[in-house]
Amino acid sequence: MVATSTNRYSFEAYCQYDDGTDTRYELEDGDLVAMTPPTFRHILLAEKLSDRLKQEIARLNLPLYCLRETGLRVGYAKSRIADLMVVDQQKVAAAMDQAGIYQATPNLVVEIVSPESVTRDYRYKRSEYAAIAIPEYWLIDPSAKKITILTFNEGLYDERVFTSEEKIISQQFPELTLTPYDLFNL
Image (cartoon, rainbow, N blue to C red; front, side, top):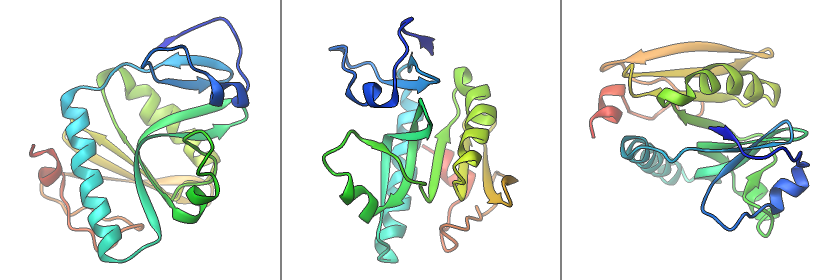
């Protein structure tokens, strides 16, 4: 992750930014920050979890989407690209022709931790996501073989760590049957 330019961008300018490359950027306090391409492990974990969440959404006939690598506005001049987000279908429909940056509070955000994103995912995003009251934030950490689920409670996150064959407990998906072992077994 490297700051790209000395120009400062408003959120609106960021939504329109195109440098003609396939580089994806987050917006951090007006600065464009290039995101490094994910590893295949990262891609496959996101795909596997996305498939499981989509199955659960369909099974329960919930009016939700599970979106991958979608932007999320987290401040005045700040936007993140979440690995996965579970969002309200109606809110997406209302913004169908706008930039793919969700500007409401998602039901769930999932970040897959990579060696260069540890501090960003565990520290910065945790406080940014709490500031917009995201009900549930998952940290999938392949190196540590653990899943941390943060549940929003009175302005802060309560944390629970799941390892091995512990059944993951999610307030957003209480009937989900998934363990870290299941997810990490690619």
